[in-house]
Length: 403
Image (tube, rainbow, N blue to C red; front, side):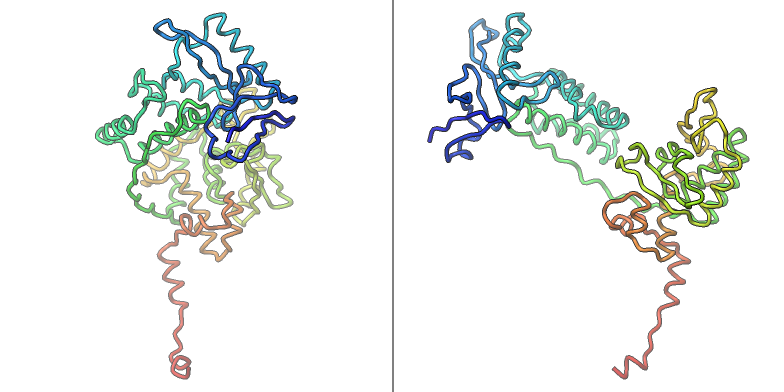
């Protein structure tokens, strides 16, 4: 059954009963008076303009171009479609349209991908890692067009990386970055479907040991020896991580205005600096309350940050990293395996061993799963705690026999 596309104020509407059967067809666009709009089509809810362009052999051919706004997003209505089509016709007159119907090269489309507003909104670190991975794909695929990438091409780089000693999880991250680009190409109608890009089953990592209270004390004791210049500040930072469960970077961005000593709580992640871009409140435990009262006495009066940068000069800036201090300290303490995230495990596990409910712990950690991850990953238990718990189990045989 023939189907016509019409335009409403909110976007594209269609008539007819065979929508699913013709979903991939180009349908001529009509205006509000049911008049055919020359050169405009719609497919799968997207507008296209048909232009006559020159092929590589000099012959003319009709080619359909997806219509985008100046911001690079698909046009949403007929007025925007007409404006975008006029821009394309002008590009054709200036000879800046592609001279053939070929899809863009992968390397060129990667830049189109990074220019998309949804991609540009990602965190700087995420973008840097993604670009690094995609640079490897660009080098591997050479001048391949986006529609000529096959599963065998993907498997070739995957296997090459594995032979070079790359960890399966790292290879998987490369594949995920490629998938993101290919998904965008599907949305832009350069691909009908994505080539298969299977991720690897990464080997299960060995469970990291839980930092014990004595080891944490040894780490703190090593700070003055290893970090003469910033010993007090770094010790405060380690305690803050251990008593709040904060992540490394979000802890550096906590301000004194986020601390309510009278209210006995601190807010982590204000202004969207947490991993999930949401703030959370951690109520004081005894150790955290004592830490803040001590830090307040030594607070730099000209700085709003809990952990001001030692190189800030007249500027009000927070410290950027304590990684070098950690390397020196854990070496001096003989705890080479300890990382900042182990202090988050330390906090979560001791909350579990204190008998707190998982939902409360999850709220302090910033998890949205109601405590599932706490039980699966952060619920490490010290051997001594397990032994003490086992001693509380009682089997009253008299009651069993009576039953």
